Image (cartoon, rainbow, N blue to C red; front, top):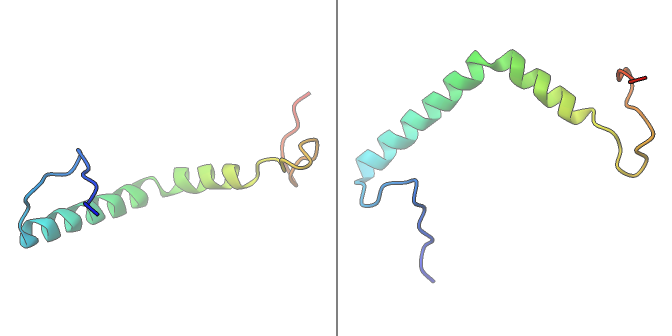
Length: 67
C-alpha cells in the first residue's frame, strides 16, 4: 500500500524541518484560537443549539423564534 500524497505539503522534508513545520502550525493554530476565542465559542454554541432533525418543529431552550 502506498502513502497518499497531499499536494499542500512539501515532499522530502528532513525530520528537523518536519518538526519545525508542525511546531509552527501548532503555534499558529493556538494563537488563532486565542485571538478569536469569543467568536469561536459563540459559533460553537449556535451550532450546538440547532433544531432536532427528528422533531424539527421543536425549538431549543431560549432559542429566538421568528414570526
